[in-house]
Length: 316
Image (cartoon, rainbow, N blue to C red; front, side):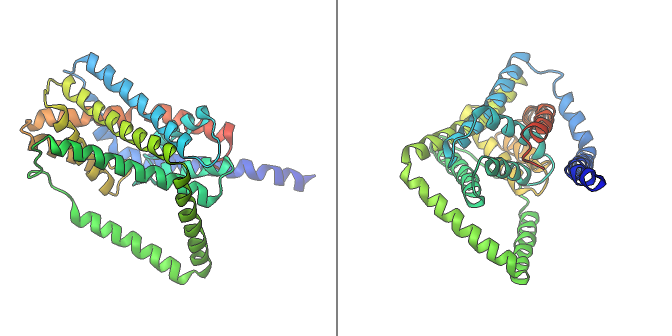
């Protein structure tokens, strides 16, 4: 009887330990950023509320579109409501780990719970990320063709990015060399991922719709930045806003911090300054944008994350 009770309590103990680990990690990541959060909220003092509401609506729409992309790319049928819930959860999880690792892990776990193999789940996530890059590049190509964009004053942290990439690559390489089992798993999973990626050629229309959806997702985020600029009385053209958004996205991705903190703000500020916007206004826009897209979704993301863990029971 005692053994049965101990056995039944093990999943509960694991869940409690996992929750504790998440909370400790959250404190470690968020506490040093409180100053940035305070500065973001201060940017609301002189904004036009109507444009802030537009930015909020566009931000909310990004989660709906992101869920739709997974619906299109999934190898097996997904429930849209659950997929939307998982995407909302990523607003919290992505703040814990750099380079979107938290959100990717959550998506893979969700797909695995929806009867996807490891290779299929990895292929869906890879296809989603690749289409996002391709869609952004296509939009950027169109913008460059109609804009005299300049990044002469934007500084990219090349050395930090190269060092971070080198450390990650070296760690993976050493792991594959030293651990034979890990090498076998890597090769087997990699082969399955490539095979499942190739399977999309049988569904060209779904792939095309997913590409258009990725472009829409990028456009929505650029629209949020446009609304933030208008909110602080900056009349920069939309094409210029998109170029600035690209600078922020690039530096945010290249910076090895959760959510690209510091890098994204620096890229946005540098982009606005490069277009002749004064530093004070550029900083206000950047902070307002990050408040809407980074800080504000934390609360609903945390609630969704707890619901996902307790009700759907796949991320444990």
